[in-house]
Image 1 (cartoon, rainbow, N blue to C red):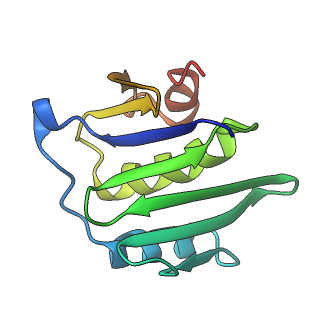
Image 2 (cartoon, rainbow, N blue to C red):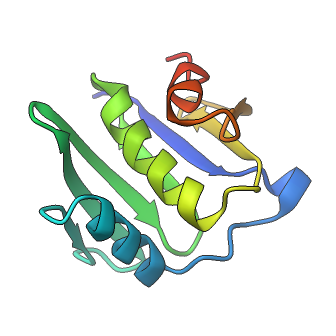
Amino acid sequence: MGSTFYISADRERAGPWTFTGDQVTDCVRRHWPASTVSHAFERFLEIDVEVEPGRRAELSFNLRHGAFSFEDREPHSASLTVVHAVLHELAPDTPVVWWIDYDGDPQPLDLAGGRQAFIDSFPA
């Protein structure tokens, strides 16, 4: 079994994100009209996006805890592209952290520097 990555607001510095699941859904569909965003599981959005030909992102958004998650499989940049688009639109000034399921030590992500800086600040 592979690992899972999580991305959330830096709650120690800024508190939780205030956007809703409906806002996440609308944002993803605006950026990628052919995407699928479903409520297949209670309290989770399941997001499936082809960010560009051959680059697919499959990730979840936990409505209760306000965290994105995705499996550790390449390319990470596809899922990070979706997360960046949502956060850039819905919470551009909120500090962001990531962690992996076996190490709960949150590490910062650079949302302010643009999409590529955000992707590059994710070391996995």
